Image (tube, rainbow over all chains, first blue to last red; front, side):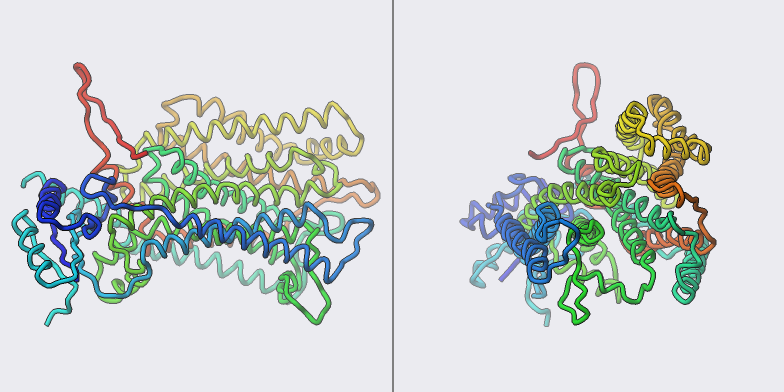
Length: 170
Length: 456
């Protein structure tokens, strides 16, 4: 369950976060929504730890294996003899391996980033389109309806312009 | 409360200004798109003539087997260099003034590498069997020769096209969500699909920042490899004038020179067309002018170093090619030296010139005319006077090649025009991050300084 409070400024949003933390809401259950990146710690500490570099590394290793197999394996299985040149030549194999390594490392980074962001996301979430116009959202995730009601009261008290939930409107 | 209302008003205004290119276009936009489309259509007609008649309709001959198509290939791949590379370098170095430039530069890369990548296919002849180049099991028994630099080209260009497109898309993700939130009906559905459900949570922004940096670090070596490989297409042959160890870095620098020049040209056009004077200021042109000056100096150094060793060694065939170029293509040589070295270097040293938009437009166009000429001078004189004198020859492009060249320029412009109509041409959230959160005034003694904060 999600409840979103929409605020007109960072200062108001800070007040809301303080109230939520004082009331015992865990910081890991609170996040900000904004159309520009708010520096870490200005509102909340997101506790973000980069993990997608493993995807980059995995992509790179896979790319290196595929690139080497493509260049060296193909040349070995289907040799094209040209003059006295070696069938498996180190520089061409190196170049093809390098390009495949970089290509899959880039694709791995993209996939890792999307995985970390939780995208693509087609589920219904608490959101407000006017966040695009510079408003700041404070989003609280709760497990119980009572907690959500409590968070809504705190957000309203902190000066939220409006509240949004992830429930389908009746 | 008034401060927050003012901040919101400011954000709304900036969104509207930077997304103004996506509003319903005026008749002039349609006219431009139609004219560019007409040139592309004529180029397609010329290509159809080539496919149905054969390569005989081109000017290429024995010994000049590479002509306008390969000149175009080198030129467009070169152009593609700087967009993503400049963007990546500026991102990694946290250059605060980079923000309004990024999107236009990244889009330029994707479109120019797309145009450039078509030319080897156009040049092939019997274009309908282009897929023979792909490394896949085939009953024809035609296996790709991985020792051929042409295959390295295919690998490198495909990597760069995919990598640059990913770099452009990732950079656009928050802006796509912003457009989604400000749109309605079908446009909202399209941008909702493209934005993948981005909401701008703190975690998403952190991952976005880290991934952008990682991609920037990955794309730079790819960019360098692409033009190095294009250079090795030439340098690994024993053709006089090409077989040089310096060719790869020389090509890379030449590519960055032409790319930086085109980025500046496009900045000027975008600034005028979409009234973005507030975001693309003389400071941006000043800084990009300094960058252009640096790469122009480097290009001149590499050219001098290459010619010096040729002149000093005076190897007969090498000198023959150079003499032939200087005599038969003396005017082109002069255009290249004037446009790449003798005029831009002194002019770009002057701050007033770097901050003058018309002057920068003139200089950047001149640099690119000179760079196109340089591509011609690399290819044609060397092939005309190779090692066997009884097959020396010359080359002049046919109408088919010229029409396809014109279509390439028009196609690039058309893609860019369409992109700027349907997507945010300025990195809105990047610029707003700076103006809303990171820019501040700092009182120092009796003066107030504009300061910019950057997260480490």
